[in-house]
Length: 272
Image (cartoon, rainbow, N blue to C red; front, side, top):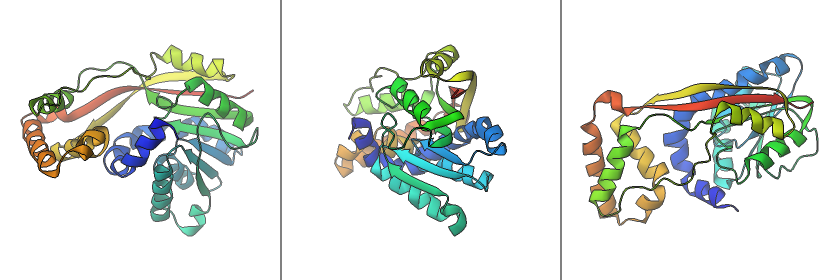
């Protein structure tokens, strides 16, 4: 199991509650890129990094003729996707969604098994984006299409992040350090990555994810997802003190400061 898979096993519940709904409206935009294929008869769709099943469930609701196979490296995320589908879909629709634990760069499917593939906010997490794209290419039949959305480098500072760093520093943990980014450097880089993996008729465009947090929602996002490793390691009394201080500091921000705006890139390409 990779470090990322193990981490998402730990934070699956926090992801489903506090982060999944933030990215969902932008994630489902990738479905528009494969709609022409579905209208032309595409039936079998692969959802790479299904997470809590957002794309898969949306696809099944949108198109009564498709079958969706979701994969995720995290077994806990897979369990969450199954539970979400059980809640969201009736028996007939539920039968059109299967999900399994697997890695994006080692797909357990034969060549040409799918008519289309989608992925949202996953390709920045995989050990090798190129390997994952090559595997998607292999798993698609001729004329199949991969459509994905992921983060684009850039965007302005987000004031709540500054508040989190200051509060953690206040309690002796120091501000968070930014690790190396795997976000795409540009729209051109997104297109080039698809072409390098063998895709043709590539299209890549910019977009923006926008979400208005409230104080509690952002605090819970930090505690249960973004900084779960730290908060889960703290004694309960200290965790509560930091949580109270964080909420007071966030409440002092103007409401517009809690609006997250992050650049994304939406890209798709076809397998010849």
